[in-house]
Length: 238
Image: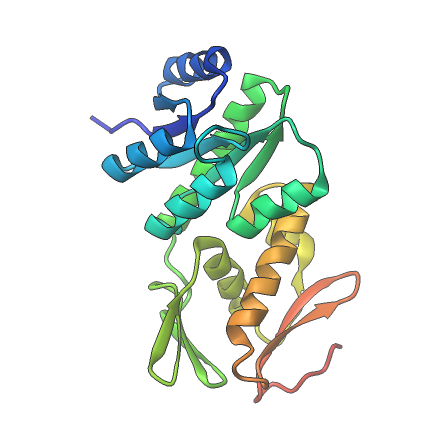
C-alpha cells in the first residue's frame, strides 16, 4: 500500500488551520497542524514530510524564519507560503528563502490543492527522470547533475533542487538559448508573475555559485531567455 503524502501545515488561525487540515485529509493527504513556528520546527525535526505549508505571520517563529530553519535540514523540501500580505518585498523575501509558491489570503482550498498537486508532480518527476549525463565540466567547475554538486578546486557546494533543475536545463541547451517560458513551464509548471520572479532569483543564485570562474556565466538574452557561457564556447549573444 502506497504511503500517503505527508504535509506539515503551520497556521496560527486555528479555525482556518483545522479547515485546511480536514480538507487535505479528505483529499487523502496526511496533514499535521501546528499553530506556531516553534511547534512547526519541532514537528519537522521528528517527522519526514513531503511538503510544507507555512503561514507567514505566526507567533514564536514567523513563517520566513521557520522556512529558513527547515531548509537547513532539508534544502529540497517544497514550501508554500500563506499570507495576508500582498507587498512585492514580502514575495521576494519568500523567493530568496526558496519558496515554491505563495498564496495570498483569502484563497480557495481547491486552488491550494491544485498548487500542491502541481508541485508534487514536479518533485516526483525530477526524482524519477534520469539526467542526460552524470557530470560535465563547466570551466573550472565539475557539475554533477545527479548529486546536485558543483565542485571547484576540491571544494563542493550542494545545489538546491531548483538550482539543479535550471543548471541542468542550461547545460542541456549548451550553445543555444534556453527560452524563458520553456524553463518556467518545465520547472515551475506555470509562467505567472510569482514563478517568473522566482526564476530570476534562482538565476542570480546560480551566477553567484559560478562567479569564482569569470570565464563561466549566464547571459540574459533580451526578450528570449538565458544562455550558458563557457570558455570553449565563446560569449556570443547571437
